[in-house]
Length: 98
Image (cartoon, rainbow, N blue to C red; front, side, top):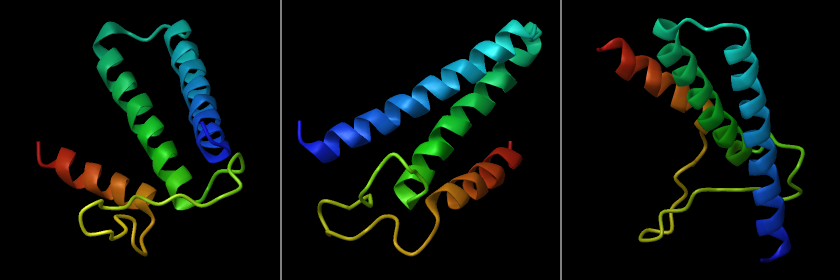
């Protein structure tokens, strides 16, 4: 592994550890079974949001910038938007249609 891969993996591990801790705190506080799906959904959304934030440049554990590149077109998937914000907008739009 190269240095950038190691930094990326460490940043992802730290995100994982954080959200595992959040999940355990929620479980220890006595989540009702009916509410478990909602809580798990919130935690998984938060994990994805955190990864999108990292790609958007909001992570102090990386000393380089990330991007998502379409391998076929070589274009940035990120472009000039904040992926973490667009992800939440997308979820709100899609999940409100249910």
